[in-house]
Length: 251
Image 1 (tube, one colour):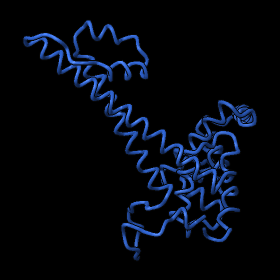
Image 2 (spheres, rainbow, N blue to C red):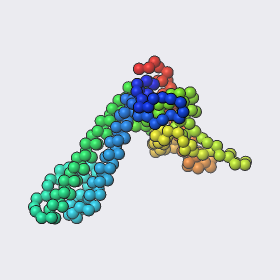
Image 3 (cartoon, rainbow, N blue to C red):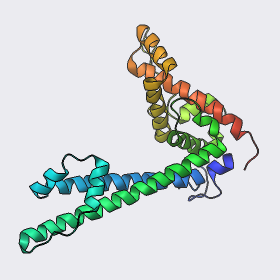
Image 4 (tube, rainbow, N blue to C red):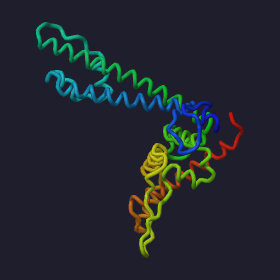
């Protein structure tokens, strides 16, 4: 499992000193990087399409204004060249062509993202299916956390070290007689974001998490403090689920 996550190659040779930024040359790492790139490109294309609509012909804008995103993209992809002559028709032709090309790019990127999602899901189901059993852990979050573990095996001796790596270990900032802790703003921010998604999903759908939140609220804890505790518990759960896999012989 660890060999799968770390991969056989690295873009930077190892050496002393701080760990440099590397290209994650792994099966899940490469697929995840491709997906992130496709998502960013699709978001950019969507923003461009909607910016073109703002300055488009009022009749066309009115025609497309009430459509949802999926229907909007399909309609724009089918837009043909505007018939006629003159400067106004040249502007309309350029608008139609731009909207059509952007919509086609969005649909193409959406297909790539869907395929990469399926690929990542298959990887998790094959190598760490137990991660998908608990409430709130989807393929996206599972892959992100597995990549973090695979990139930093020397820092994962205990579940507390994994929590610190993910930036969810409590940091004390006591003063005088007041003993208090705050969120950790360090660590792997992608892993931290994955734990954040897990916690907020559980707050919506998991009755145990909801009951815990209510109990801690009655004890006087703030929302930020409760979220910090929940993220710490989620890190512990993930570590214990994956630890049994990482102790198996390398694949």
